[in-house]
Image (tube, rainbow, N blue to C red; front, side):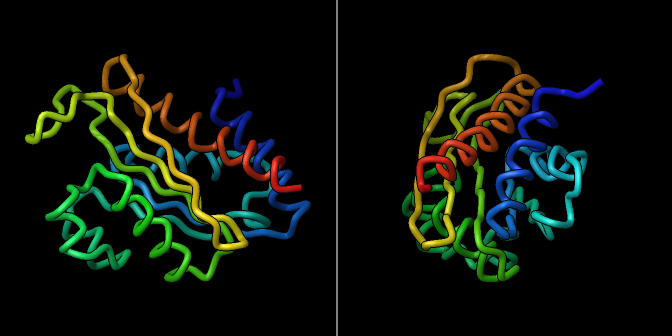
Length: 164
């Protein structure tokens, strides 16, 4: 049975392959589910070469080059952090496009009062433009992770179609 995220990943893979673009992922709260969905798609190596799962602040700094100053000033769950995550993933992998996700899937929110279900997204496109969104999901942590995965992939499809 094909899950919604794999169906979306198949469509995204088709678009990326058509455009001869490689994608990289930088995930925190989704814990690799975006990468897993992409790996279950058809012809994955033609559009996806690597991904990073950076759950801690230290991992974000070491693997993706997110600045300590950004994490202190804005927290890991912020627009500034996902922008740096996407840029770092693209830089480290030499992919054309990066998706970054960081949030509080649940059951708990942030120490700063950010509610559970708050998830930030960034998409760095091949022209180096960066698009961001924050979403508030209302399910349990498993549902929020799945919804965030589908949203991240689906939004990238829309961005690629709009850029034509």
